Image (cartoon, rainbow over all chains, first blue to last red; front, side, top):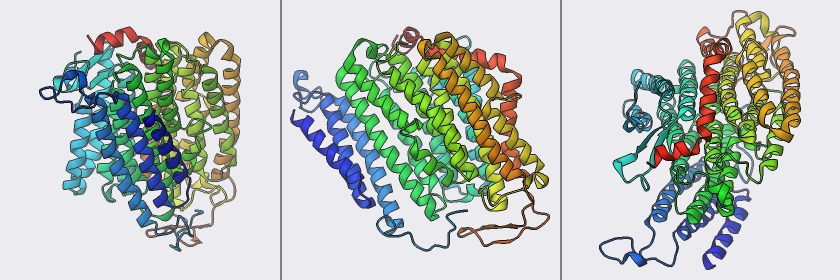
Length: 110
Length: 507
């Protein structure tokens, strides 16, 4: 139940931040949302059994399911890459998201 | 004919290695050879797989030789082989266009295109839902860079929109995969065969995934991103995108829906029906509202997505096959139209109807290619659109039940409206008084000032080659529809053969 509420709160916060104009806030929104997805994935592997999944050390009855952990690891890496990319876009764009686009001499109506 | 399933990972490994080579060796010879050669090899491999699948229904491989139940499975069947071939050919022609316009010399463009093509092949071949998410990300990450590659301001803005829409839907897709695992304890598509038809919770989890895929496929009412992003990219890049993003999402909808629901309609089938009809009609009507060539074409892409989704809506073998045939037709027709518009834009400096006029006397070849492309979109002979629509209508007549007349009306109305909207595009660009002034391309800002149009200015012949090739493929699909429709029917039947799929993947 705690996890379900936590996922809900994270999604709500993430959606709110993604509605903002500034790209940096959107990045925070994306992070919250992906945290929610990661928690959801982890909870898919039954949280009650949460000892490390090493068969020679832990009793199989109390081992965590390793597959969702592998999913989460992959998802975290992908989110990392995307976060860096969006931050890069935010830097290149200066403040064109909150103010006006700079005069570059481009013809936007070609 | 035989093909060792252990070779299936090569469809991803070769493009990824080629992308790495292009980063290290930046010379034009190496990067151009790989940029054109690797997608062409993928297409050839896909064509060979089609030949193999005429006798062998499935080729399954457990990557790394792990136990089948936990390994990532790669499966090739007729549908995935067709998709590999179609996207491979379209990517090859688009790559040639990128070389002819010189865009392949921009930073990392060959590597980005090759990486995206690896993601596309992976998404077609995987039988693992989480792996599907990963390959879709592999396809999307280079696309984020490709859309903004020239760094002009409008492309940066379009890049952000595209990125955020896809990040949001990928997260939704991931949540769907997590829920599927939580409910069933597996993400192997073969093990999930029919699971959603038996259990309502699984059906909900799978439906969440399908919803995310529908956003990526640009289904009305979640289609707005396509018109705002694709036309901003250059014509070559737009043609690459048109061949991959929405098509991968559509293929995933076909596969996941057919296998997990075991050929039964989901409870939300009427909602899908409304969305399909809306997509078909909104796409064609909205074409009227545009005053640039490639934005008008982006609405036609939305309309095409609606037509292709009639396959899973009707959900018979014939309908799925007809949908796949229509998908192939749409990729080539749309590629031809996008590339010919790009050639006009590049030469005359604009794609706006009101700034272009009277091009038919100067560019009879471009006028002909565009007219034939439009005829194919509408479904007129002598082009592939005719058989695409005939196959769809036949499939609807034999299996759509209560939806039959609604779908007939939608297809017919959409064709008439498309005819009117696209003839407006063609006549405004090709007829009218001859152009006297134009804005030549400026290397730094995209468009320059208004100057007199020189008499001898013509579209360079090499820029017309690519769209002509795409159109020739569409023409070829019209001339020999029999074998191609046979292949599509087989693909549709195998998509619904869940028992055979399960037996092949989990022996």
